[in-house]
Image (cartoon, rainbow, N blue to C red; front, top):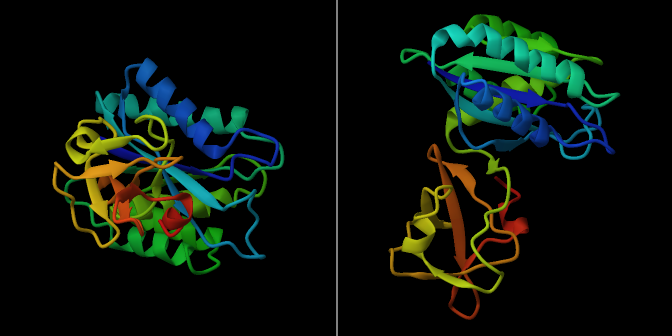
Length: 244
């Protein structure tokens, strides 16, 4: 059984971030033997005066391959417990868990995710869609507004082409040069592409920048590169990744 889990609005300006809570969930899921988890993706949502958020209004999502469907109830209880006991004071945590059935249709969830990047949505709309799509959606403190971002993150991860993968890649010191083949050997890099979406040949060499990160495109972790004014291929900088 495959799941998507997304959480939103668990932090305040002084606390650890929502991504760290997602990492805590993953650690407990894998330690308990309930399943194996994927990388965490960060999904940027609309920043608007009518939307309460800590700093960036983003949700965190990850995939779980359950070892046994009978583990689902225990996993859900633990995820709720983590949000209720570990979320920061003043936060409005939300949790969404979607079972990825082979015949499931995700268009409505994907649409909701894209709308959350452009519109102010309501909890009522989120709950109505969750019931329609058979997605677990629950709030765990404060106003519970985080359910909107949690459901949106599920849809955006389902889309396959949204979000930055949490964490920097440890590939070497800034200024080091690696071949594409060497980059593809890294377990957290599935593809190396330019900003136009074209893959680079294995023998091409890439200059590493200060903070090397991947983005989620075509359901995989993609390292994006660009050609500098000196003609050399370089890993994209933070500003270039802001749209993902």
